[in-house]
Amino acid sequence: MGEEEKVAPLARLGMTRRLLLTAGGLTLLAVAAPDQASPGVPAAPLHQARRPGTRLASLLSSDPPPAEPLPPHRRGSGPRRSRTNTVTSHRKHQVDDVPMTTIDEGHKAIVLTIDDGPNPIYTPQVLRLLAKYKVAATFSMIGIEVRNYPGVAREVADAGHMIANHTWAHLNLPALSPAKVADQMNWATDEIHRVTGRVPDLFRAPYGAWSPVVLRHCAQTGMTPLDWSVDPRDWSLPGVTSIVDNIMDNTRTGSIILEHDGGGNRSETVAALKIVIPRLLAAGYHFRTP
Image (cartoon, rainbow, N blue to C red; front, side, top):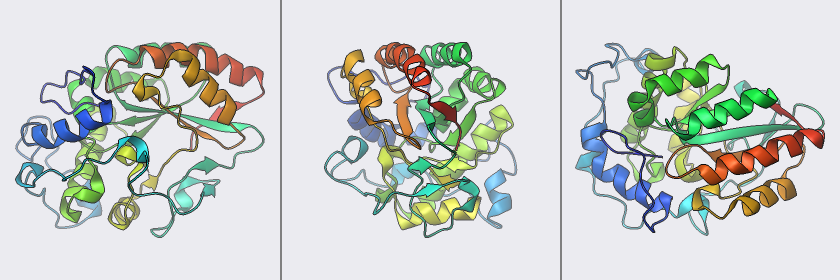
């Protein structure tokens, strides 16, 4: 996760990555957000075709930041799902559905999701590992990072992995107005399409923070809300052993595993995946995309 104008991924100098992202994203969005006059942004964005008459709203910098940033990944507060939602096809979602937390693709089918990239250091390492074991994954990409590292985003697409929309700047969506929620989602879709040629049909909310407004816009733009069921908290740098043990202890048939390739030092994540992927395969699991 990074929200800086030139998108050097945010450092973690003793602070949690999520607090940095929330605070930094709100401060820097004004200089990073695209508009229709910006170089490289399509003259007629895809979301406008889906939402006739829509124009990009004013920049989020006009809004004050939330009084209290949402804690990392619903750690004790923030929006929570009311139930587990399992679907065979993400295209079957309706506006009143809760986000997808598991899949139903047969015995020991699981999903690996990689969030907050693309990142020029860690994403290529993850891609090489996935290629080695012939594993498909879903990369939840931040629009700012796609804009600043287009070549890495294209590597993910060219390798055949799924790409999900993870907003433009990884902000706490329930704290924003509906128009600005739409901007965060639409800008990311437009940039992902401009760079990779793909129109994402999956959406992952930053921090797992869902709201009726977010779910409604997912339905209006044809994106399925994607959550997770296994969170090893790799973003907090708990150590390789902790990440590995968490995944192996909690993964079941249908699990959606959350990992990260952006937002800071992800060397522990890469090291853990080198252990976890062959172990899961040896245990009979097979990787699918939602």
